[in-house]
Length: 257
Ligand SMILES: [Zn+2]
Image (cartoon, rainbow, N blue to C red; front, side):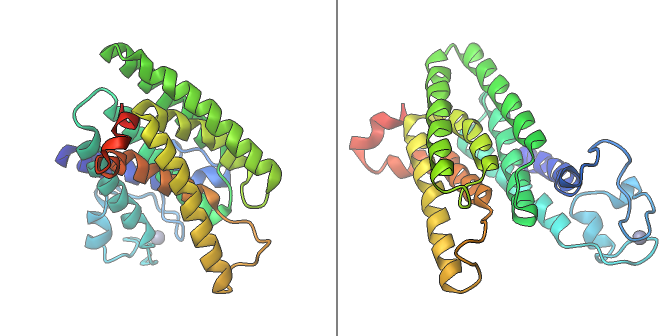
């Protein structure tokens, strides 16, 4: 878990680059990170996750411009997510797939909040990586039934989200439909229970938050909502907590197979 948390800090630092650059159509590899105010490249010693931000008192070393608290928060959140995923999945081959899945969902949720869209580049690369890693895990463990359930689940999620999008395109955008197979596959590989919990939670969280925002007059009824955030939260909770939740009801234990 400690190693996963440290890996999470480093990956979180990369996610900051993805979250800033991908929606702006910029490359994630070049040029290297620079201060957005004075454009001075950031030295390696000033690019250590969380620690550099604290050591520099949230200011650029060259020009003194404020550096957003969002950067260390994304790094810390990714570290926490990685530690939780490592605790839940354990030292098994599929751990890599769920770490990639967690990192993707953090990046996508934050891009969705800011830009109200889920970039296809991030969605497709994440889906390809997670599916490849889970198929490899099935081969390694000789547990092909998991991948069969995962494919079926991905198809069902795509069909359901496609249907919801057709009925209500404002609430659920095309980006959310494109994300559905990844979530369906990742949850299906774990268990049928995770598929049901994830689908239920994503839509429950979305409805409750949406209704609350409309009631507080923070959101117009017709305004688009960053539904990808709710999908990410629902799927995340399902990956981490389906087993502890369903274990309470003996009748539901078969769903964990
Ligand atoms: Zn600067």
